[in-house]
Image (cartoon, rainbow, N blue to C red; front, side, top):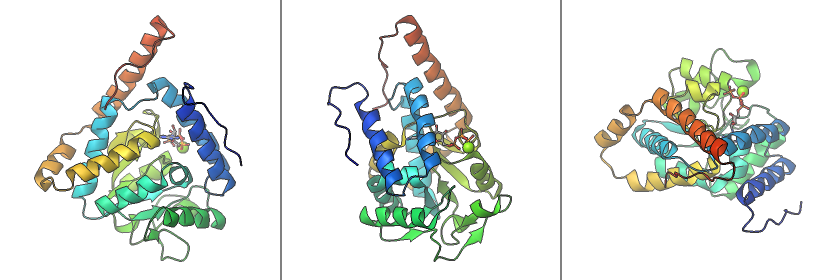
Length: 265
Ligand code: ATP
Ligand code: MG
């Protein structure tokens, strides 16, 4: 497909470029058709947040990276949208935190699994878990096609990063006592609520910041990292994220032309 050329000064440039990336991902089998719609739901929430990383999201990003760095066995779950949008950052984060990448698809098709695996390998991944040729374990209480996990990945993980995940699966991961980190622009989704640390931000902004924090905190003493994690409260995080959306809407209600003012970084 030919990408739409969006001028640099176009106010929706980042958003339109992202849309093209997701459409390309759909055409190369990486993104499911339902993934296009999920992206649209994300876009709508990004608009409400002001298309910026809030200071609150930045704090959640830091705590999530601290949790990955102190985990015994962290794992990064990868779906089609995440792979299409941030393949290189997923690989960098995996390397810096020692968390393997595991493909987990809501809408499984062998050609999607293959396309995602190829994209991750092309981005520099040395190993990809969760593929059909790997051993598989199950997490209970989920319908048959979606409960499969890799025994060397999510099966034995203590901390799991599940960006853009569905609520049923997040709830199942909590039931088997995983410490769940997510990236979800909707602070009211079930995934946002069930998770231990919810990063309310666009994955394209959050992942590069996670990579930066992982580099920065790699040599931080474990006790300091553990303190960052234990001091983070997700309920307060979600409350504050919703409050920030309301503040942004209130400023728009006063002056529809106003732009979002506070930024995390
Ligand atoms: P839940 O199942 O958790 O209640 P849901 O059913 O509303 O959520 P799903 O389609 O299951 O939504 O999950 C997709 C989630 O991913 C949505 O909450 C959407 O806002 C979010 N999302 C989509 N694109 C992005 C993105 N680029 N960055 C961050 N979040 C995104
Ligand atoms: Mg859902």
